[in-house]
Image (cartoon, rainbow, N blue to C red; front, side, top):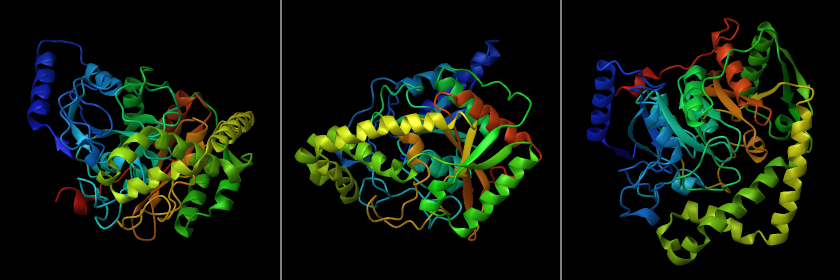
Length: 411
């Protein structure tokens, strides 16, 4: 956590308790403490995105759309959670706040860029947090910290009052202890309500092998994936490999789109106050300066074609299943998107096409740290994906649930 307003949180909690005492109907999140990634405005709290660009910034005058919906449902906003500087690059010791740490092993990173929300929920400091996801930034912390993280379809959750990274990719979504809580919170911030139960009968689940062949998972993650496939089949689902069209260029197209948009957003700050940025964020943002208009035009056309190929894939399957990350969380070493190991080859493609995706715990790796499996739905089919995740958690054939790292969380 980078900002906690204890007085305001206790005051809000007392208001919620008084409302119950008066016999008022509780909201869907009545009294639930929530942490917010520090790129979303919360009235009375500064929004700094872990950057010296915003040192001295006063408190936000009003809530972002997401926070306003949380409050209307009765949630108690306890404070702001850590993130990578401006949501780009990687963990760094240069920005105002030191990197968040993984609650399972403080020497490891908790994933990013929503590092604080993932660590806070993983350590049970709050039951739910709101993160932002541009290329995996909700799902990666969920996998690294052994919790659930849901990325909604692009455009479903309003982003008013959020500092953007790449607007055509950015979404906000919940990190929670289980899929049922994630579905509840998503229903509030997307104003869709809680998804219904999954109809009886198995689903068709595809494994996009081309992505895994291009970036093979670590051996422990590969073993957990095979166990997941076996568990899905025991639960009555049909599981088999599928061909993701042009899988080799999804990530390349993502980088062109994301870096061009990020540079366009922060170009003036780079020129006027680049020295106030940490070197990792500065380098990550500067990459976009080398992407010209012709590159962007080609990437835009390619993105349309990739989205069409992705949509066509769902004529034969209901969901996709694959790892969230190639393996366990890595050491907490500074490094940017160019020099550090790639943790997001399995998440970026689905951000590029704007599809919903959820990361769920699927056991542990060779070092005892959590691993996550990712399920992806058709664009706009968020309700069925969440209903599937909730049903899967309740199915005895699915043996994995979020665990609490007792040895560290309460110290």
